[in-house]
Image 1 (cartoon, rainbow, N blue to C red):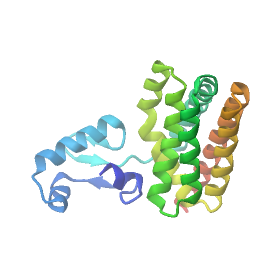
Image 2 (image 1 turned 90 degrees about the horizontal axis):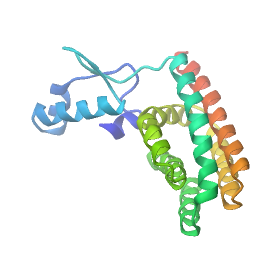
Image 3 (image 1 turned 180 degrees about the horizontal axis):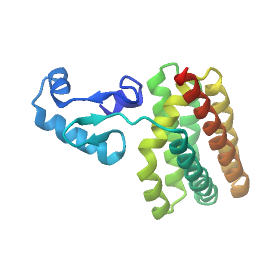
Image 4 (image 1 turned 30 degrees about the vertical axis):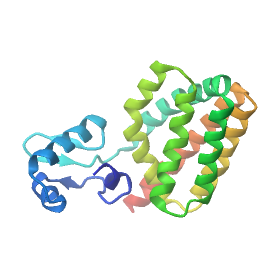
Length: 201
């Protein structure tokens, strides 16, 4: 169900009902209910008491608040990664970037983009910062889906921005890495707002 939400098979505002999902997966309602409760804790769905679950519908205010947090936190995490990363970890990021450039499947592209960002945060070696960003991971992933799927050309821009972030990390230039990460996230924010407007039309 998580992958279905991230891939856009369940759209914002769509209601999810235990009985329908249980029929689709060929299982009882209990494990479906438990899975939905997990997704609610992670932020992928909203629980509506007595009415089931709903895929969140984002407002412009929601998006603005999320990206302000993300720019500040991921920017700092990227600076930390530039200082603390190992050669083996650089190789991991290079492999993920290559996979992102070559990916033709939409779901694979989203997964590789998430992994690229999550690895950078992990390589910063700040446990408290990682924990805070983990709590925002669902919302960040869902907005990435919106802006990459709905805007032509954003994938190419994102690829170039990833390359700039990675080049700064390879140089171990923390200030440049943070600036490039912040630029990438601001660009993602602008694309997400445009994707929302297109969706409204």
